[in-house]
Image 1 (cartoon, protein in one colour):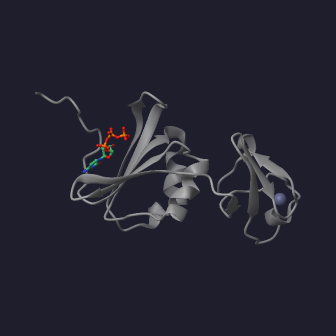
Image 2 (cartoon, rainbow, N blue to C red):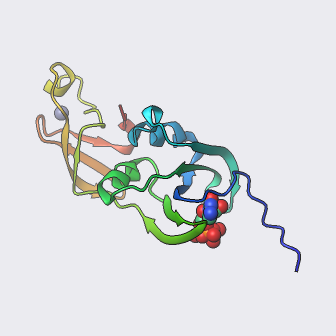
Length: 152
Ligand code: CTP
Ligand code: ZN
């Protein structure tokens, strides 16, 4: 049988494929995972067709695997992401991401008066709701929602 499964981004031998990223959040995912400063070979595609998401992005990081804590960071911007661990060209594991119960750093408190917006303090939020997203600041107790989500 002839196969028509054409890859838009080449297969990798070893590493991680992060699939089903909303295209508009591709660069946020790259930044949350600290990939700008990585020495690994990284390939990515954006605005690829996807049934589920309309347009999706995909990132392939060669010779790198991620811990659950690292990947859960991207849950806020890519809740449907699927991580595929590749070893010797085979997908050996598929993982989904989940929003943690507490978010430390990388999200800005939407309250302009919050101390975290005036002093060098790492933000901390309790996740009061995951769907819709509601993050309660530990410092000012104001709730930051999806609509006001700023990832830094
Ligand atoms: N992939 C890759 N290099 C490999 C093997 C797989 O880049 N050596 C990529 C595939 O292109 C795909 C993802 O890893 O984007 C997952 O592979 P696979 O499970 O084979 O694809 P699907 O069944 O389409 O995945 P899904 O679970 O997302 O439906
Ligand atoms: Zn605050």
